[in-house]
Image (tube, rainbow, N blue to C red; front, side, top):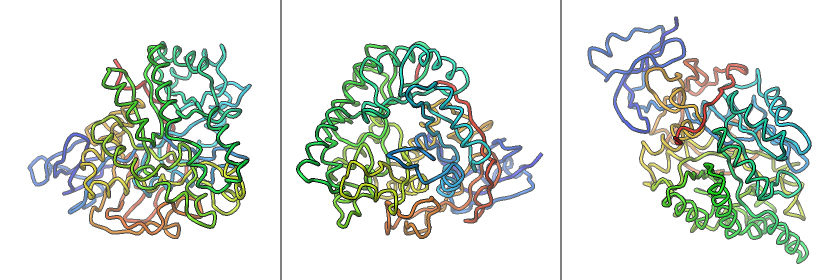
Length: 466
């Protein structure tokens, strides 16, 4: 039996802050006791970690990543090995990635392919959502089987006609199935049919630079698709989780639905909270670095996203980590913004950016942990094994130095991509040590993990539903 004790840190969860010692036995949290009390003094261990002056927080749960995703004639540049190592450096100890069903193929085939990519390669634990690209009777039956084996969420796209796109009828059928089997439909809500018209028209006018990517993917078309997804879910009697919400008009749709008592949830991402169309407009094709979908919005949208996180109209911050190198990948779209691979790197930056948001007064410390750890774990059926520090939970624990300063840069990050979306940004707060199921993955700013430590985490259904 291996035992570790973490002494004298400020333990922060979604519900509490307490100066406590944490006892870990065989990969799980065994006990907590207030620092300096007789109970804490009974804790004995093989390894002691001094967390004086530091935070002790649950490992982050990033519920939206795309490692090795094929897209736009290329592949996301992070593998499960490099991507999960980078996640650990950033204080994230669980990712949920997206397995992809190809049109004409079974869900099982896609899921098996993603298991093969991930197994034996991950530094931290991982789960899968299933992208449903081809709704038919067989697919619908397979959804039931996947829920039973712990793949309990299914993503559909109102965007990308000819690739991942589902029409309203297909979406309704999948929602009806999830209403029965307990699964959660995740929706990329943009009107892809209308966007394709605007793309064609922009290119015909000679508007080819990266900034036009944001201009054609209009906020109103995100809001319209969000509204439509909500109504389809309401007809189906199914819950709905809208991914990467970027537009204030889409937040308003979610808020209205939640006020009406519907089981509708929303996620946003750091890029929408910290970046804007100003980045997309950077000269010399630099704006291509910031091409993602939904796109970056004008800066005034940020205040409404932060407000949504405070009022719980948005519940989760995930990264949608889908990195493509500037050289050789983003450059595929020189002269035609529609050919720029869509995606940004961010799995390593999320926890630090959200801590900076605490210091900037956007959210509280406990809300930081709630939107980055506890809620994603609850939303996707991993709580209380993940997302908290409590007896019985997995010992996924981060020792976080709230005073250390850092400058984000491609020169120092660990993601397998040749630029940082936050190059030169100064933030306060930094990960010092990371335990995954009690095993040190980052030890005082040194990587001590290994590929294959991370294991597949089957999930129960969404814990916000009756």
